[in-house]
Length: 300
Image (cartoon, rainbow, N blue to C red; front, side):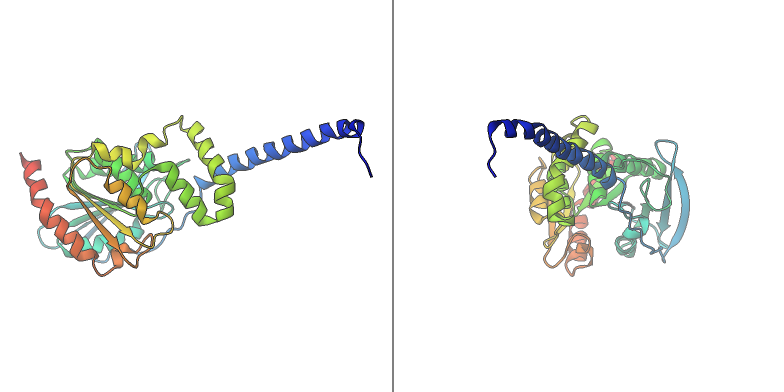
């Protein structure tokens, strides 16, 4: 069958509307996915603290909501307070194993669930800025100098909270963090599914850029690092498939001072660097070098 120019003209509207339909469908689906990735998944765990004197309470969040918080004091005099921030989709229980280790070293530990996580109050469109707001609500409640420890999305919130509260945060621990937000999101979407990540990831990030008025990069850890003056320890699994170890190394280079330690766990992924053999020694060495200095600075 042969087609002449008249036949082609006849099919042009069909082709045009077909392509327009595909583009519109892609935009609608990607917009829905942009909403979805900020709402799910949620994977809370159950692991309550089993040491010390435990206070299980509710404190106010910045928006009138509430945060569930554990404060666990050791039986002996406390060496200081460590605030822990969990990652995306988790809850305060996720940080209990890390907190238990610090408790063995004599620290008071404070662990909260971010809004829209655990039994804290609901909140739409959680992000690093809102994670930081929840950390700051905890810092206000504690009302004392702290060591701040964030994991994954919690680390992004932690570095923002530390940049805003330099006189409160003595030491900063960033586990499974990243350098730049857009790069991290693309890596995460590709980790979930390569087809999904490559096909919809760029458009999801574009929608987010529009929704957040171009401020995605403003709150990237690599940019915030330039404001950080307290000692920092970066902790990262070398087999992390969500945020590759190159992200951690790039973040390390972003700080303008040399008080930055880096523990790279050889056989660890995104969430288990704290379970590796060298973790305890690396943390203790970092604190031995910088904690007394931080205590003296806070008292001046």
